[in-house]
Length: 106
Image (tube, rainbow, N blue to C red; front, side, top):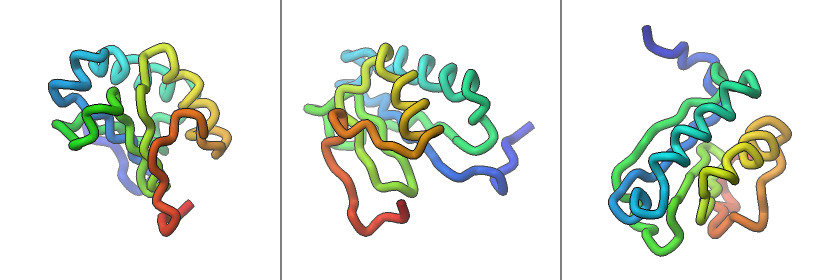
């Protein structure tokens, strides 16, 4: 059964393009999804595994919509901090941000 999209407030796009996969994006995906579930954010946060986002040098890359925030070098061990800080407490992990759309809805 699909997710109730009415409840979704954020979408985390996790790059699983070749460059990011070589840097650990598969495990980043697994760990971020586990952290979201552990924090009971599963209903409000949807995750999508993407192909290449064109930001290979920053990989593994995670993009949070609608906040307009791009995270770089999001290794598996950093995902719990990302989930708790940004997705739960609404505080972006500034040291990992490589681009922030100032016009985004955040």
